[in-house]
Image (tube, rainbow, N blue to C red):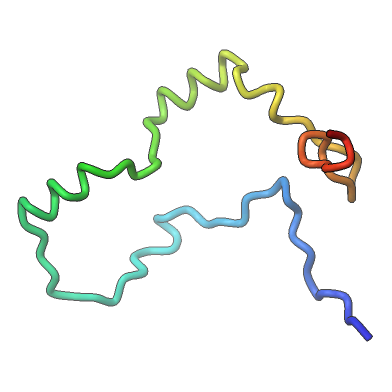
Amino acid sequence: GLVPPPFVPDPRRVYAKDLADVGAFSTVKGVELDAGDAALCDAFSSGTVPIPWQEELIETGVFEELNVWGAPGTLPPDLDPSAA
């Protein structure tokens, strides 16, 4: 008795809008950060990487071996547990 989902996302596509199109999500107002808050945030890696560094990695092809896709509807070889 399972019903098929109305939408099946493509795993190779990024479903996101540009930040300029979306605008600010936060509804919190009146919060002010001080130097201590800035120091705390600087101690953590945010996961953001400068664009020039990303472009350099793309140009060198260092991740080319990771961009292997299987046939539509199948798992890529690096994610298929039976291929191990």
